Length: 225
Image (cartoon, rainbow, N blue to C red):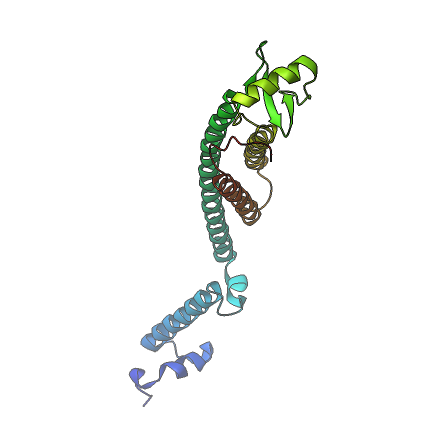
């Protein structure tokens, strides 16, 4: 009599060549086919997970490999979009902060202009040591210089040429930084990592400028010295 169906271990069933499995042993045949299918499925899953070389994938189904590639590309696209969204939000936040800083600089600029000396013809004059300059930076001479000197005696705290130059430099720095961020956004060049690295630099540059302004006296209208 032959061996009972249930007495054959699974590993022995898998080792048996197909031609040695008698056709009338339907149960053995069914069990063996199921085991082979499960073994192949487990192997493919390991290959998809990267735990094994993709022998079965290439050998048995290009559809499975194509699905894996498409899934990988989808994940990469989602990661790219998330990274770019984060960069865009950081750019928006920094641009808003720069615009708020520009408002403060503009107010400071107006204070300096309002505190400048005024000649009888309306020209603003700034103190530069023991000399005086007009808005274009030209030194006053003759009667204009004498008039400015008399006014300065009564207004020793009048705005200086150094203050005017400093506020204009800060306004230019803020606008230049804003332009760089907007140009960087418009170009769309580089990887998200490169864009983030440049943005790190912009954020640090802005923070340094704000800290520099905060360290200066807000209403210091002293002499150029």
